[in-house]
Length: 247
Image (spheres, rainbow, N blue to C red):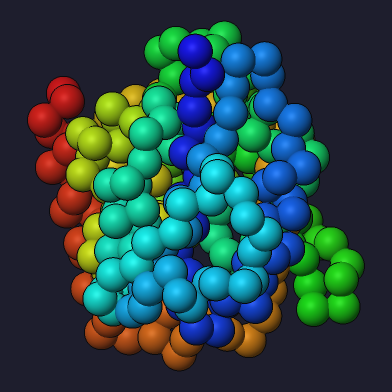
């Protein structure tokens, strides 16, 4: 029986143009024996008709839509349609380098107590060049429970990139999926995962993170102001509550 890794991808109007490239990077992945993937595209504020004609016919591609709710809602709705034992994040405008999925799977198989993985990231610049994204990558291997939350609590920035997450599905269910935030929903998920289970940092590059004007991180409210303060408060309260429950 084939085991499945479910790749969840929220998409909105401005990012539809990047889906073909994301598909090419996903379809080229070579997985360990006995594994396959499904790609759950979730159109936020639209339907599968918005994606029609953009991608080749492939039974592994499963398209859905929902009323406009933001990226957190779209990710959670995509997960709701998934069937895999592992759930992998891939934003519509990003690319998976060769071997990314295989490395996630291999870590999870080799280390049953690890709940989630993240990896090194290269920023994909508008001119096509790649630049290393880092706040100071941790050492490869185990990320002890609570380590990432402690770092975030001091800096309000995650030490690792949440856009590279791969998660055991039962752990994702325990956290409750992605929070309905206008941004930082992936950071909120990372903090929740971190206080519940050990993670693993993969030092090989696991994502090419596309930089472009339409991404939400370019919004004026992303790193300061009342909205930012409320988002940070929600992330802290959620992670603190989960940590107390697990203690």
